[in-house]
Image (cartoon, rainbow, N blue to C red):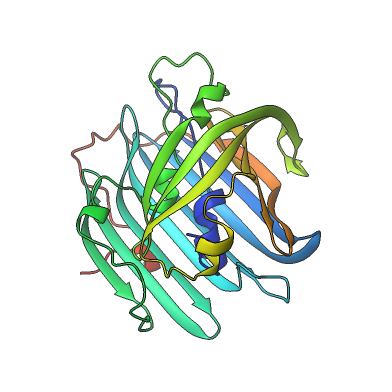
Length: 292
């Protein structure tokens, strides 16, 4: 997360969802985001979330470039899948790939009981001045996308309850381990160009780097610990979920904004029975297949 590729930045904006504990209808959210710095366009990204019979899949891809792309410069794709449990999402597989300054890097991970089971890195050799990632850093974690697909407590009366903001997310993206601390900031309204218009839940976000970072990195110097970042969440029609529709991040060069100009949910007809948390998921197609 917070690498310079859009795929990495999507770990903060891509998908935070809340579930009330009721049965989820099959649904797909299709969204598109514009990325800007101080009002100047620097990129775009797309995002799809599928909810189906106790499982989920989600993927994002995007690119950014230009003189103002201080934290984001390149292109990337991120994908994850797993199970919807009673109190959280439990990922089984995560992958990311991105190109930055002509170099391509990739990550593939599998999970078991919130612990990293397998990890494969296809990346250029890094300097040895990063804080080492220990085995303990890979336990009790989630991948960047699944971490933000948060299930609300069972029998929760409202998916827009401010209490949904108050939580800490332990995240490992294959190279970096960090916590995202969310706190309630305010309730507001948002109008997306295509799709949603209505109430929004605004959460403040604070990044706490733990391992895999260089002490002098831009993320550690200028992003970690800030208390003025925020994510705006909107409900996904036809489900008990909310999802990010806007990210605001003040920087030294001005305000970085990732804002949806499309946010549309479609109910899908269920064709498969519910899957229990102990049942393996079918393999993904294409580049998201785990390593053999």
